[in-house]
Length: 416
Image 1: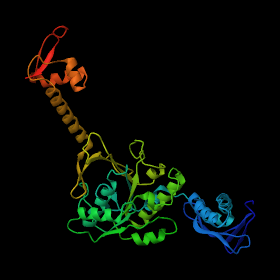
Image 2: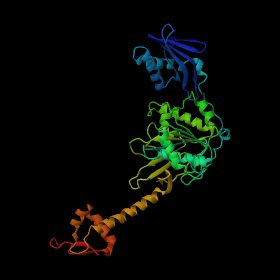
Image 3: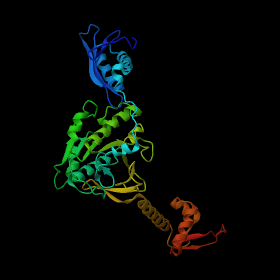
Image 4: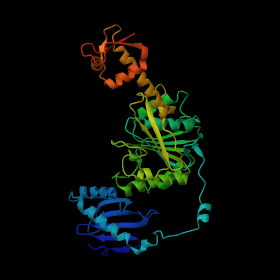
């Protein structure tokens, strides 16, 4: 079938194929150029239905869903529908009836442009999150980001500070799509010993934000200060997270939702296995990084204790915020800011040196003849260079005898 062999009657496009008909009703192009429509796969006599759905005509996920419906009712082969839908999309994309919806260049003076820009919304978390902003909190699984987001939600719903930052109290909406209801309940009971705040609202059923339910989502979110989605991967229609177009389209929906409702939105995302900084470790296309206004990331770090995490910040409107260390107060499952990462590294370095000095000293006997360098190395597993440096620091806490160049009477060390 060629792209032109279709008919259009009262807004219904009919595409005849060898085994079936494809009927596309009232296709509409959104502001980003995507085409959404009702699609019916029917028998050639136009009587029987082989598949039906509504979605983005360029979405591979939509193609697959239609093809599965077709396969269950027909030959079991999904290929014909996937190929047909690509033909349908290419034809409708070029149809002159849709061409007037495509955006055209429209320039204005910089002054007029700036006059039309609405000011940034007030802070929801002082110095970090603003109303109408879109943010990501990313980390490897089981790192604590869900707890951190729940801490944030409770803080705003109660008006208490979050990681040392003052907050604007208000209603909080949460899509909690990964953890079980029992887990959520247990965590909230520990975090809120004085009672669950009335302004904390939870949606724990399956949910996906799409063009079709976008207006309903806007109505549901108006008036809230914060919306949390944990995790965003379960609330989108993205099938290939490495596809720039799919990821950008999905995150644009979340950004539109934040802008149109003036709600601060925080999305939970995962890190991939490979390491990275400044959002580079986030799984999927870089469009997930580019679309949001700010990214907060959690990392486990060998220099920190098991209940501590390094937390980093990068955002288009943020200054160079220092990396911090947060520690988990286990009785209430609450993350607390305990200082900068640089300070923690320095303290860890000092503690490591002191521990090494103690270990080196305890490896020595408390009386002569003592240990040679070789024996000391074997007992600690450290190099002679490191032991010599420690011996210099410990000074008169270590006694020595023998001669450096004498093999029969080598230098030996013992505690004083």
